[in-house]
Every structure is written in C-alpha cells, then in structure tokens.
Image (cartoon, rainbow, N blue to C red):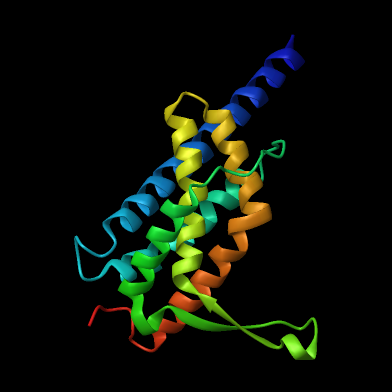
Length: 177
C-alpha cells in the first residue's frame, strides 16, 4: 500500500529526527558538564569556551523540547554537593559572578541580583541527572527530564547565563586574570 509505506517513512524520519536531537543533546550536555567539572583548571579560556557552548546548549534543548514528552519529576540533588560546586564556581568567577536582573513585575522589585555561579550550578545538576539516566539505558527518560526541567527550572538560568556571558564578552572580561 502506498499510504502504509509513506506512513512508515514518516515514522522512521521522526525516529531519526528524535535520535539526532537526543544525540546532540547528550553531546552538548556532556561537553557542558565536563567544562564545569574542569572548573577552569584545564585552560584559562574556560569562560570563553562556556560562552561558545551556551548557544549550542540552547539550540539542542530547543530542538529536543519540540518533541513530545511528558513532564518528569525534578532531579534529586545533594544539597551539600550543589553548594560545594556553587562555592567553587563563585570563587573562580570572583567579581564576574554577580549581575543585575530587571523585572517589570513590581517597582519595589525592579532590580535583583543574579549569580552566574548559581546559573551554571543549576544547569549542571539538571544536565548531569539526564546524562546519568541516559547512561543507565533510559534515553527516553533522559529526554523527558531535560525537556521538563528546562521548562520549569534551568531554562531561565540558561537565558540569564547567556546574557551575562555576553555582557562579559563585550567588556573583554571573559579571560582569567
């Protein structure tokens, strides 16, 4: 039947598209986690590398999020481990860590301070959780976790981090001192 083979081709194309999107997400998430784990130890231009990686991460999760998936529960986080990474990144970033956020909501909340270390830490733990699920042979679950946690948690951290890294880039402040 012509319709049946065409339908099968569409299904295979969708599966190939999903596989490619997931493969790219795994690749970018792995690169991100490796870069954060290195914490600037391996090279002096780790913030520059992070600056270049963030748009790839944003693109990969956007393509992945275009696929249908159910919401997944938030990733479990060891708060001591999270605080340790946050503290390490905050020390490493120094004065480049803090930035101002502007909100339109209420005049008394016009300016609130953000933290690049906090953004990077939250993104890291959500990505790492997905990688752990992927490594445990749960690729569909990893995709669900990334999609869901991106929508409800680390998506805003990603946007804020990209914006702050861009500001550091244009002020020539990405390089380590």
